[in-house]
Image: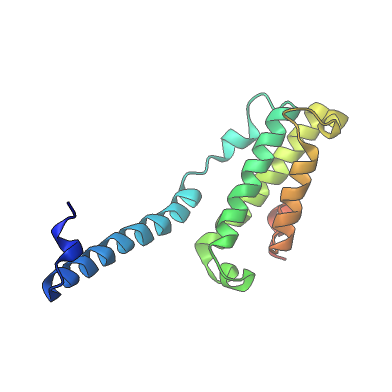
Length: 148
């Protein structure tokens, strides 16, 4: 047996269905909007520049920083729009500084081992992610000069 609203064709039922759909869509829109704020607020710079920092750890943390930047960048329709948002621009700058610091520490500790591919150090994947971010107009490897 079908629920009453499926075969009941009165205007009150249609109105209630529309209201419910609007409420549900509003909930999802608000949840998605809050995710970008979480990306920016849940950022611990010390996590990225401390720890074991072997080639696998360096690769994982680098990809994480790049993915965070991609997520922030994609929440704006253009690089110009991102640059006009002070909070997002500052966060990308912070990520860029941490990215350069991580790269320096990883290179000091591992040198050429960073360029040797392994199961956990996917050098080509890291390069693809960097290129994806470059195509979006952000160059994390410039550190504090990311916006210049």
